[in-house]
Image 1 (cartoon, helix red, strand yellow):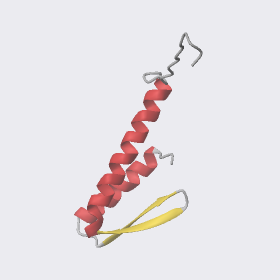
Image 2: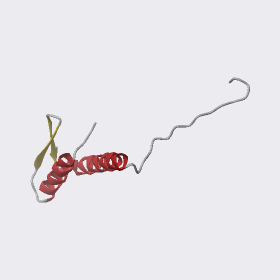
Image 3: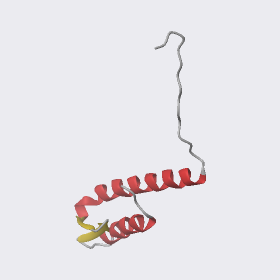
Image 4: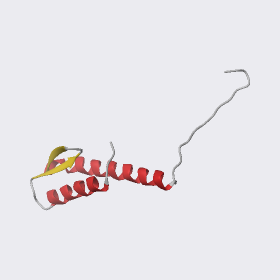
Length: 79
């Protein structure tokens, strides 16, 4: 799944609403809406962490900070 900064902002806004006492909040991504209750705060934190790590990895790739690793092996016996 590809996430955007808007998705991260949406998750953070949902967490803030739940912390402020709202009982249910909604997050929309790729045309799908999911409702979260105050008891789902751990799930929202995991989602926030996943989005952050994917955004960081994508930004690092775009900047050329992370390069793909390719390993080539050769043997002398034809294996």
